[in-house]
Image (cartoon, rainbow, N blue to C red; front, side):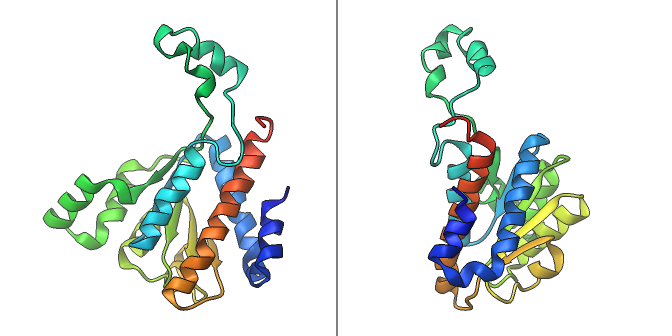
Length: 210
């Protein structure tokens, strides 16, 4: 199944950002094959969305993602984990920066609350990583600074925003602008969009693990 085409069949108004959704899938798929990880951030409901996305990518979403034979051989060689080996599932390394509460609170208190996500990107980034910022306005300062930091460091940058794109549209390479302005309406589009991205990525990477 092509999950992006299925998405736009169910939400025809999202056809305006279909190409960008495919671009995001391509970026995450390449990232995985190149040994990179996904660094995500947002605020409020968008922060919760980044945790949701990480949950869909780090384990099976629509597929079981059984470990490969070579992985199973390694796992079953260790007594303590052997009986659980077949319960483990292949995943995409995806990190919600919003969950680093100790660092976020310390940095905001000691240094600058606007740069908390930029600090995490700077500290955690490696070659071939992808940055994904979510902001309904596209103008959340801490997300914008993180995106700018990611671009400066050579990371692929993805944004999920409302229809204006805001400042993130000026910074990020891939900008998915859903056709809504009001925060709650933007968020209502964001969920099916990132579910489709997660499903399509999973199919491409783990479609042999059905």
